[in-house]
Structure formats: structure tokens, C-alpha cells
Amino acid sequence: MKAFVTGGTGYTGGALCTRLAEQGHQVRALARKTSKTDQLRDRGIEIIFGDVRDIDSLRPAMKDVDVLFHLAALYRQAGFPEHIYHDIHVKGTENMLQVALEEGVKRFIHCSTIGVLGHISNPPANEETPYNPGDIYQITKMEGEKLALRYFREKNLPVTVIRPAAIYGPGDMRMLKLFRSIAKGRFVILGSGETTYHQVYIDDLITGFLLGAEKDVAIGQIYIIGGEEYVTLNQLTTMIAHDLGVSPPKLHLPVKPFQWLGSLVESVCIPLRIEPPIHRRRVDFFTKSRAFDISRAKRDLGYQPQYDLKTGIHLTAQWYRERGYLN
Image (cartoon, rainbow, N blue to C red; front, side, top):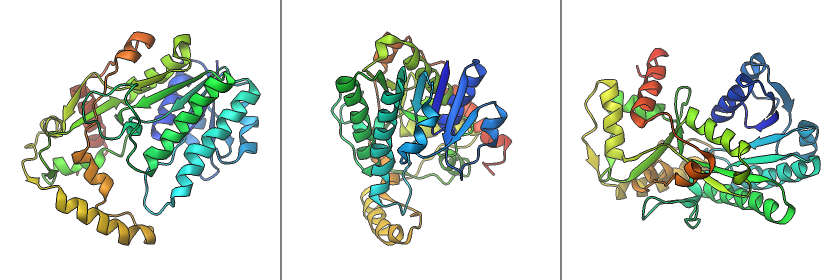
């Protein structure tokens, strides 16, 4: 199989490229010229320089491709105007879909996010739960997902949409702040801590992508790929603390003042392109539930998570420890 991966220089895309190469597939990754590509090259992965916003740069990259994994995305960062999210998640996705159609790509695996469903008021949610995005990242990811499904319905492009839960594992740096603050006894829970959180270990997610590409039943479908269990924030922070050998966080503070403060700080920092020390999205972590039913992926794809949350937390913490990140 000849596979093409966008977002290959990111955490998830790099893990996907590695698994594909280990399985003996020919792998091609799209990268910008400013991206670090040495690790991918060392694994025998062909690098094509381009940008999802530049349709002409995509055509040579998709020649003779069997399966396309579209993972490229702009994660939430301060200072980026909203149109850039649209340019990458919507227009960039449309460019990918159009060239894939022109080149006769056999399978198009589109990486979306569980964030398109927003706060889950009656957990667990599933693939039929109505859209409810809460910010520009989630809104534009929803629009990109809808585009991909429209290309399936109207143009018969064999699309499958994968919605990952919160991704974690060795090598992931987004969870480091949580682990480190718990390790140092500085983590404060806003609110009750009874909102739910659903994660997926990186290896399980990659398996989900590959199953989505292999199974014909997946064409035209959406799949939530998550771990076997979801937990409350109180449970999650306690599990992390126990693995780190420290006391679980006990301090709880009211949410409302931090929501107000987050809005104020954003209004000052974002025009200056400074990452706000506190912002509404960070407060959302404490107030918005994320809990999902993964039974469709199990039934259709044979997906079965191999890493329970306790094991995943241990392996992630071990990776942080070995590199001195928790000091």
C-alpha cells in the first residue's frame, strides 16, 4: 500500500507514519519547508514539501496514492486570526478532497475531533449526537468534516471520518503541564471536578486509523476512537497522582471568577500575539464533559483498545520522568 499522510510532522501524524513504515507500506508525508523532517526521513518516509492551502503543491504528492490520511490541523494558539483556521481546516480540506478525487485515491481517512460535539450534557455521546462546537477550532473542524462527508455523498469519494478522543501517550507534550503541576503539588481543580474526560492512547488511535482504512464498511461513516473508559477529572488527577507517588489534588476553587478572568486576559494578550496564562479554553477543561460511546468502532471495525487508562498514564508518566520533564 502507498500511503500519504498530512500532518506527519506532528505527534499523531508521526506515530501514524511510523506504524505504516513498520508494517512495510510505502509512506509519503506532506511537510512545510520549515518543519523538522529528519526523524521521518530516518524511518524511510518520503517527504513532499507543500501546504494544504496550496492546491498545486498537493498534486505531485498524491500521485499513485492508495490511502490518504488527512491529519493536518492548526491547534488552538493565541494570536492566530480566525480566517487561518478556516484556511487550513476548511479550504485546506477541500483542496485535499478535490485532488484526491482527481487522482483516484482509493481511501480518504479524515481526522476530525470529538470537539465538534462540544460539551456533552447527557454522556456518553455517539456519532449521532448533534454538532455543538464551542470555539473557532471546533467550528472549522466541523465544517471540514462536513465537507469530507459531502464529497462521499455527492462525488463518491471513499471517505471515512475519525474523531479521536483526547490524545495522550509517550511523546505527547500537551498533557505535560497537567502531569508536572500534579507532580509538584500545584494543581488546582476549578469547580467540583465531576465533569468527565475521555482519552485515547496514541497506539490505540493509530490502530483505529488503520482499521478505518482497511474496512469497506467504514466508507461514508464517522467513528469515535477512544479508550475503553472515561473518568471524572477528580478520578483522572488521582490516577496521575498515584502513579507519580504524590498526594492527589485537594484544592477546589469556584469556576466563575476564572471564566471572567480568562476572557479579560485573552482580550489583552491575543491582540499582542501572546499566549494567555489563563484563557477560556483552559477553564473549559474543568466545566465541559467529554464522554463517548465507542461501540460503533468496535462493531464495524473490530476496534478494541489495548491500553487501559491506568497503563497509559503510567507509560506517559514514565516517558516524562526519563526526560526530566517532571522536575
